[in-house]
Amino acid sequence: MRRSAPRAAPDPDPGPGSDPDPDSDPGRGFWDALRPAERASLRAVARPRRFPPRTPLCYQGDDSDHIIIIESGWAKVTSTSEEGREVVLAVRGPGDLVCESAVLGRRERSATVAALSPIPALVVPAARFTGFLDAHSRVWLLVSETFVRRLDDADRRLRAHVSAHGARRLAILLTELAELSARHGAPAPGGGVAIGPPLSQEELGSWMDASRETVARALGTLRAEGLVRTGRRRITVVDVARLREFARTPERPRPTAFTM
Image (cartoon, rainbow, N blue to C red; front, side, top):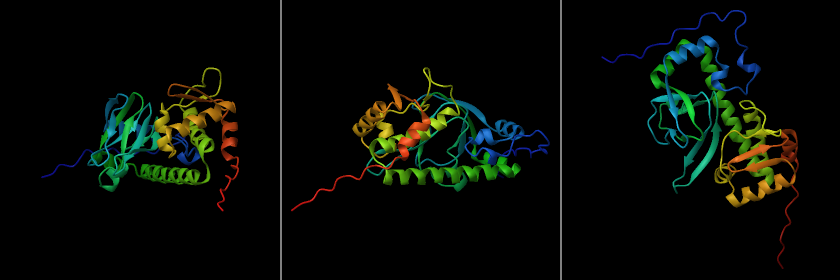
């Protein structure tokens, strides 16, 4: 006879002074949007684990038997094409839920999630996570909101790929990363926002569908505009508002070549 996984205890009435509704700050990570009682209940059915840099948290094509919550650090989400090319799809950071869509959809994982920096995390077996969700119905909504937000992010990046090129496409990506990084890090020495995820130029190029050379030229343009400072796997956005404005500036039409 198959034994069922331990079920998480239902939430008590949160009462006055409980955490604000997650809708008040839709940009928060999954963990930050949980109430204290929900965090305690989820931690009780999880096991802690540390992932060194470059270590996969889960693999594309694997069976789905657990979800992971990143406590701190950064990870990249990638997919490998039939030709063997790795494509960066997204980054995940502190408080984010990862490796979850395949578990809830009961299918093989569609992407690999790999650590970019040391990551302490909570690993929750699939049956225990679904049991937790059944006992805490409000969290189902948070998971759904996470899915919708990520779909919106992917759609926005696709539009950026169509409408912008070179330095402006990179500026759109760096603006997004700066806003994310500002939530989790102190101001950079000398001012500005240090980009948290330590992405290489190759990884940035993969994410924005451009070559490493294109990324290098785009960074040169942004440096010349006084918008960023750079080092090895290190980018600091000097002024996020100015970078956002640069990203929104329409590009000049490219000259059309005529043949006789």
